[in-house]
Image 1 (cartoon, rainbow, N blue to C red):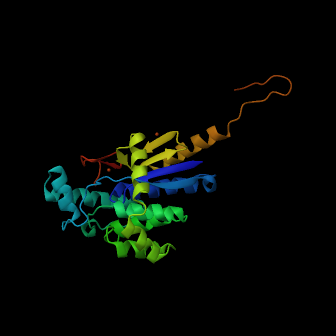
Image 2: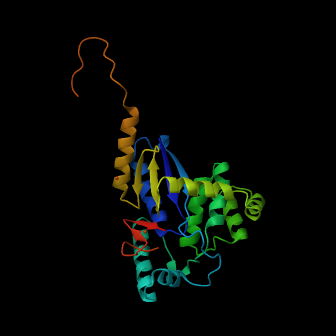
Image 3: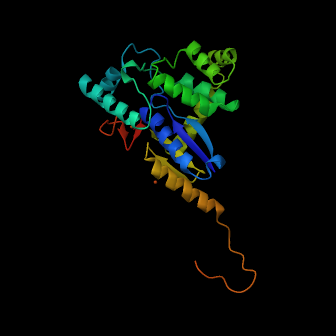
Length: 244
């Protein structure tokens, strides 16, 4: 079975949804036979790399709300993250453009480290307050998951995986994806948002059962019997997902 997860590192629900899906996968009896792939999605492809603003200000300006309201929403999403064992420090988040982080993830995928790097980048952004547009920082994080730091720097400086990121963005657009996280099971079923782990488990079981079904061959006799930067009130976030 194959599961593709469309995510953006700037989406707080993507990290939360990742944890909920992983919890379901641990409960799924055939979890070791599920191939999970990270797919690139950019909520704000035109975002500046250096805004000089905190995440609350960026959210308030984007949706025309008071600063205190934006801060309250980020506090609420921090509590949601804690429910799945994640430690968010939203006041320390550095708003930036995530394109280079996605490029590096595409590079990591070529070396079988895509999921590992995605996990490291989410933690760097939401927990550690690191700048995901800073090339030396990105290269150092890639080295932490076993990639070559100098090669990672070269990839970023040359934009070597720019087309790979754009290709996945276009693929997501063809699928009609406008918000993340977005989970696609065997190119057939989709789950949008950071849904409860029970929902993911139900879909895993359903897809698995359909895969195992084979036409009944009667040898003799007769056969018998017989599917959000902030919580749900955020204009850009609903049902546990963030949208463009």
